[in-house]
Structures are given as C-alpha cells and as structure tokens.
Image (cartoon, rainbow, N blue to C red; front, side, top):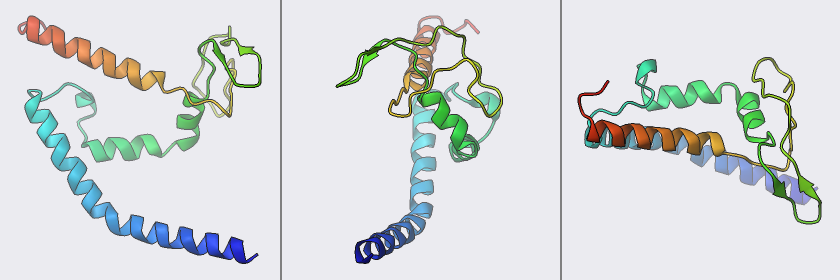
Length: 136
C-alpha cells in the first residue's frame, strides 16, 4: 500500500510539472511550426483545415480511442517473439463507429505506418512542386 501511495504521489507531481510546462510547450510548438512553414514556402500540410498546429493536435486527441485503434490494426506480416507469424487481416478496414468492424486488432502492436505514409506523400508533393513550380 505504501508503494501505491508513493506511486500516486509521483504521478501527482508529474502532472503538476506537466501543467506548468504547457504554456512553454505550446509557444515553442507554435514558434517552430511558423519557422518550418516559412522555410518550406508556406507548406501545404493541413492547410485545408485552416487551423494552428495546436488546434489540429487537440482535435485529433479528442478521440483517443479511434487514434489507438488505428495504431493497433494488423496491416502487415510480422512475428512476435514467442509466437507464430501474424498475418494481416484479409478484411477491408472500416474506421466508422466504435467497433473496429472488419479489423483484426492487436493490443500489443503499435503500427504508425499511417504517419509515415502521410510524411512520404508530403515529401513527394513538396519535391514535385520544386521541380514543377507552376503545377497545381
């Protein structure tokens, strides 16, 4: 029980420090986002939303269960130590509703390939804009 109390006290202190750091973190993220946008010529990512990077992040974080579900879908062939080979789900992905219909979820997996696909697409688009600047 003493260990539980010590752990709870530690998390209270961690959360307190985290709350104090929020203004600095937000200002730093905004400043660097502005620098990156200026360096990249205005950037194209998420411009359709016409929101700051912090607003976009808050919007995404509002549905944490959906975010977690997207990272736990088996999309590729992989092997877990001590288990057999996991095959990707043959059923199409559906992201609607609370249930992950047609998706095989793995609570132990973390698949962030969506992020890297988005980053690669942005990189390719920015490269093609530099080569063909007048192409929309």
